[in-house]
Image (cartoon, one colour):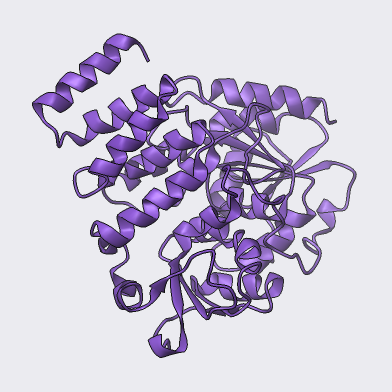
Length: 380
């Protein structure tokens, strides 16, 4: 940003010290000028009710400067000292009564509370690899669909889908799942180890004989099913790609596109195929893409590559370390969630086999689709 932007937001904050948008933008101005001290001071001083709604933007901003551990430490501070219980009321008693888990709690009995959507929990589950270096006495509350897949990869962890049987006296420490990434970094904000796969496939993709060919098998999805309400509607709509905009990909020869979109959309996809004279879009009759997470994991693992916006499939493919092309809203968009920050090489830093393709303008998918098309043609 320009210096004039810095002065502009300073003036706004002088006029209203609780102007959360001005505070967030002022911190971003400091970060753009590599003045991390001033940015951190803002969020140390104001990371409470006045700026809580902007805190995820702060984490994203810190990512740009590779300050991940500090970001999660501050987020931890927010949750435990500034009324952050409001985002996890279900686990209030655990957070209040149990010690906050830290690096020194070796072999302690740890309760991990998952409070986020399934895609988020898939992402955070990768950091169980890091937790197990501290303690192997872990119970984790996760969404029901993840209990079996995660138990397959982490057999020593007790995954449960409901906290009704949890007794606080059986644990020494507690941690929110959203704060687990901080345990992956050393004191210099460097990842301690290479990321490992989170899921384990268990069988072949399908008995569908149409897939037994030499074509490039591409698992794909196009939409977000994030629930409606508040900012979530905007995020959902601006992550979703109209199928018509993906036509340049579908016309690439020697490809078979396998529908892995969440929900029962076979009839809609069949209608689209007929309208555009496409014969390479396949829906697997024996796969429930709504509830069968292990089935989706198996199907994803059997594909050659994956193409998807930043939805649950992107997390599943990333967790499997499958070659994945993730198509994202422009940088800075509220629909561009912080998981999908990319490195200078165009990779996602959390999922090593995931490449990032992004809009240049809000709502316009033409540039990333064309770039992806060019890269795919090189593989065939």
